[in-house]
Amino acid sequence: MSTLEFDGMRFYKSLNDVRELKKLNWKQVGAQTGVSASTLTRMGQGKKPDADSLAKLSAWGGINPASYVLNYNRVQDSEGTLPQVLALFRADPNLNKQAITALEEMVRAAYKNLRENK
Image 1 (spheres, rainbow, N blue to C red):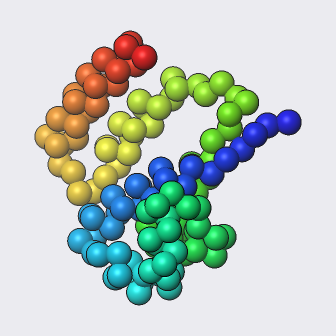
Image 2 (image 1 turned 45 degrees about the vertical axis):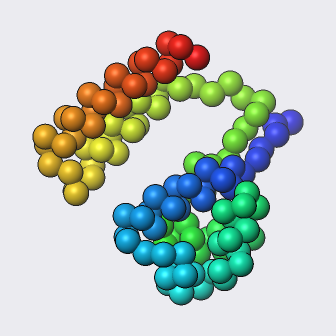
């Protein structure tokens, strides 16, 4: 039997990244999603959202909530992490080739350094 847990804080941080990219405040996010300000505040304090709020926020932010489910009984295979991240940069229509190359170089170097020093 596996132990699964939703990482609400990591989800909230990703949601905050989307909010910042859209140049919105949390009140505007609440208005656009129909999620109450109190739910957003609680999430920022580490509480997990209810199912309806999670669905609304995921749809609004284009975030897959399954990506935030941790399985503590399974050894994580991180071999695919770097290629997945780099593929996301390459697919981003807001980045030109020069920006993609710069991001790839920075992320590769940081990932290699931090992975070797774990």
